[in-house]
Image 1: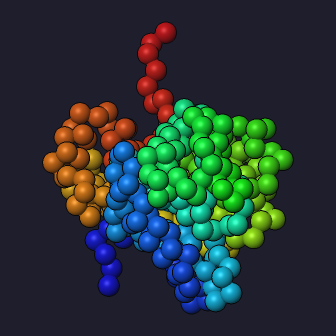
Image 2 (image 1 turned 90 degrees about the vertical axis):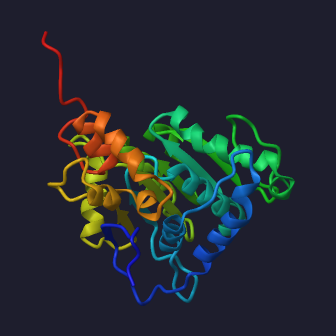
Length: 288
């Protein structure tokens, strides 16, 4: 039976990949740990479904997807989801993980990194699995796993052998950056490139490519997209629910969402709250 928070488009199920052990482990770990930090976090049901979707496996334990794209409106808990996935990738997915947190800028990448680091440092139950963490130089597990942040520059990512990567705001990434990450993880068993974003513009070449490849059923790529119908008004409540699973599930308030779209420029409301592509990043330029 469909849930009210189900995505507008999701890669169809495959009967050869019904093993949910990795996803179930990720959810159980998040449920046990996320509430322990200075900023207590909790996964929504739709976020748990995303983890299980991303970590589908066959009976041999091989992941279905090497790349996963998740697209939804702003303020739906992307950072919390990223922290939950990083916990699993660092502690349970590989014996010696080499994980990158990547965003368009180092400052943006550090948002998730700091939340992850604060969670580790504030809980003795979690910190015992990690060596001393640093503000910027990375986080190491006691078993030799490593997490580091990186800005979205393809040159800085070339030559690295990654087990996994979590990429934020893919609409701002260049194709060369993303492709360098894919190549760097290609020889690792059960590597996972997990990309999360809001909608982009006509300039978001990479994101449009991933949308097209995902909807075409490209093997090894799974996508979940929450978006409003193309002709929906920005204050259409059904359209807002379609693009924002946290609103559908009840954590985000409809009153707050309507207040936001009432004051935002229409292009921003369409992009960030309805999760629809817009024509340009800068549709208006001053005279002269």
